Length: 510
Image (cartoon, rainbow, N blue to C red; front, top):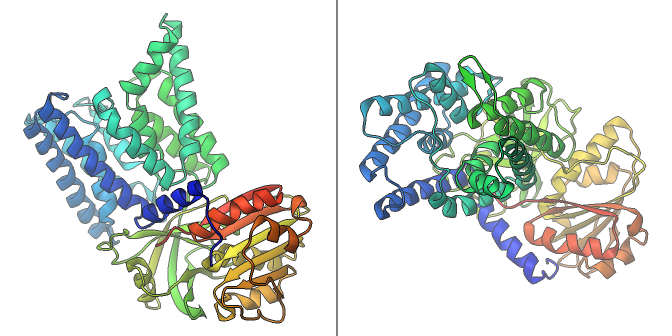
């Protein structure tokens, strides 16, 4: 049973659950399709002047070329093509180059799409592309002198739809702070440049926001997860560097400042410094954790680099027809020092298409982890006392933390509160028993927990109950993980109970 939610928390949970049914790629693809349709409606109403036939021709070229080149180059490299990524790239390029019926213009757009699609495989390292494909395609065409990206999406009429779509994407991928830093630095830099030319700040903001691609760039280009750093502190610095390159004019021979070049500068820096990385994994076996959950075991091609509590975005085979999309996020359950990489997954029916793909994996099958990241990690100072709170499947990142502490011999003062439907749904009981944490378990059906754990009783994890179970909670940093409804209720309760700091990690569904 989940603690009672306040109205704002309930609304957030509903939004998280709805967005969680779709992978970020599927969400971006859907929103870009909506924007493409919206642009044609605007043209039909006279707010844009390209002509619907020209827009349809440009869109058809972008989608067809991106899809075709993606499949062709993937076959050449003998890797599995990612169809959603190809369609996203095509739609992004559609918004960058002027729609036209002129053969030369359509050829330039097609070249941008072809270069973008091919770059995912040619400019890649260990199965991960280094540069944003759409930005690289636009930049490459600009170097030819044949055409250049116009970013026509940055018009006042488009802004009405771009703003909510961009905010949805940024919220879904948890990049709102990164986009905020980008916007502040970009606006400040643009104001400084135009201010030196005598332009007042007011018109500068209006022109940059309403008559430029800043919002679209932040929502659909900057937020691209594969080429961005996985940690928030690195993301903020990454956004600031890109914003400076975005705002400040510069030129070097045939190369001049542009939004696509600014993004490529940040991509290259993140890749060179190792802030963006992936994993090539070989499936070994599936272990049952509880009647409704499994642990999936993989052997990495090279030692896995991650922090306990982080996640990986897995590119799942044969899941392209799933509504949720073929890339899904799973928390590591293993310690970074282990020879294998494991992910704990709830598999209670009805099983989602993505989970079914995991259940159908056969030993030896390979899976790519396109992204490794997340900030749900232990504090650097081992002296900080902690309280972990997990609801059901939320045990997974904590298993990684406890396994890591045991493997390194590091001592941490941890109180672990767990809420599960019944005692047999307590995953990683061996890990919990072997840890030095004080473990307190609440079961919804009233079953007694295992002997190594204390019984939390039937009461929900309210602020008052949390203070009773953990009298020194005001001295502890809290970590809460589980379904959105659980996290949405317990996180405020932890704050009201007096926890020094509360860190969230919600599983929105996959």
